[in-house]
Image 1 (cartoon, rainbow, N blue to C red):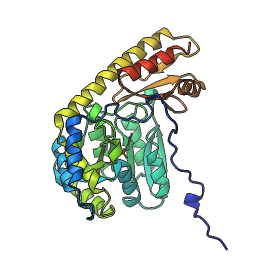
Image 2 (image 1 turned 90 degrees about the horizontal axis):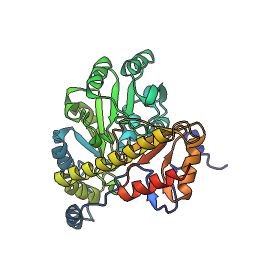
Image 3 (image 1 turned 60 degrees about the vertical axis):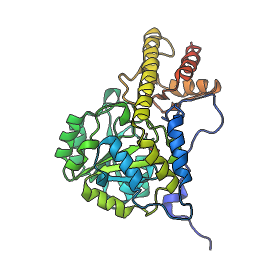
Length: 356
Ligand SMILES: *Cc1c(COP(=O)(O)O)cnc(C)c1O
């Protein structure tokens, strides 16, 4: 007799990331900015003070307070996670029971499905409309018809760069009072339609944020949930006690205190996106009717842009760029290109132009 792996893991493969060295890396939605020297000084000095022989604060209080101050929310509504990824997993496995229905809007962040599978939930899939817009009425209708217990989506969306505004979201939350709605605002620092300051008004809403994107700290693995006290209490009880390590807590507390540096970094990223999107719009017009014609999803609300080439061409263009040392993210129907610094964006555009 040998040990048999259970059905859930037997066909599971580790999450694949791109290996190898590329001169321009625009595939992961990260910030292109290295940490600001003043911030770095504070991070290192905070980490130096960590008591390495002691367990970290289970409430990550200092780090949650700095985050709460930065976004003007009440610290009592904030739970820190080992990346927002951990929180997504906790929510899907803890707030739902096996076989319950959770609604997702496709295409969206792949980890929702991953954790829902792990929790043995049933996924109900809403297909987004033209240019990957969500039609909120249709989404609500589907949630009701299918008796979904949960709804999770990113806003603005990774990978589509599109988003739902506050007004329709508030209406959606009121229409679905018995549904737990998880809004993953991983990229909301690049848009201004956050519901983070209204989290307390809804007892069926969890807002997720991360330090990995606009905040430029993917390395430390730090995410946050902001929600009603009733939900916060449950989330705190569900999480493992020492889920956020002491170095990350110390770094997080130092990072979110730098309001001005963070805001300036976000302005820089948005300016770079303006340049990249502007150049791509021109190219879209130039290439209309040619073999490599593409459509740029208009008005991106994220630090990436989305290019839809004709069927079969996305993969080809992805491979072409990769050979030139430029890494973007390939999806079946489009390419997602993270905004880089001016030089990286220029290299990407120059390489793209050599397609024709
Ligand atoms: C990057 C990303 C995350 C993951 O954030 P971490 O805090 O790094 O785990 C979550 N949701 C979306 C939509 C993302 O793009």
